[in-house]
Image (tube, rainbow, N blue to C red; front, side, top):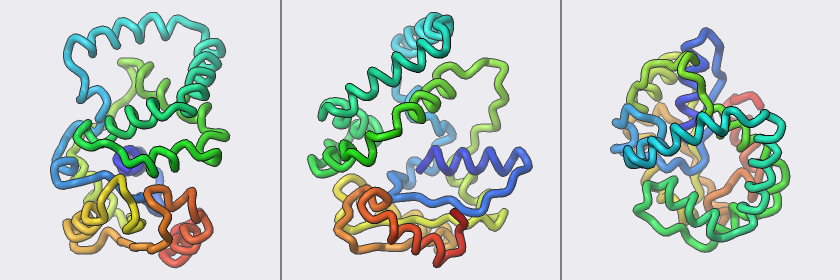
Length: 216
């Protein structure tokens, strides 16, 4: 959710148009919205570990791109079959303060998720880890300001949340909508879909997008 909002904000700042942003059960709370650093990953690392990552980036960047991407994709395909991979990743996503529910882990391991996602995650990792110092970076605004920036530009922000979600509580989404006087749209869908509404019932999600006039 945070990545989607930051990406939409940067896309808008570069002169493009944004029709809408859809957030599925976002793990966003009051503290997250006020944080000027949207990069959860580097912010969670100690200076020593961050230095090791910087050294590793130099050597990793020297590996030919086809070899690098194939190796990462192969490693990820093994990782996604392991509970450890998802437990670690999901705990990290929430700042280590919460143990993910087994049902959520199983949802993330479902075949629909595993089928074609490795190349996309490899591209995401490369864009973040191997970013060149010369690459343009927009000003790091608190997430709250980015959301307001999108709303001011008439960008629709739709939050979809199922009450049976065991990963992020419904009150996260309710607080997010209330913080912006309900200009952030909230749809509570009781589908017994858990955390991954878009995987469990994609048809229902598409109906909601059409209802709110968000193009797909």
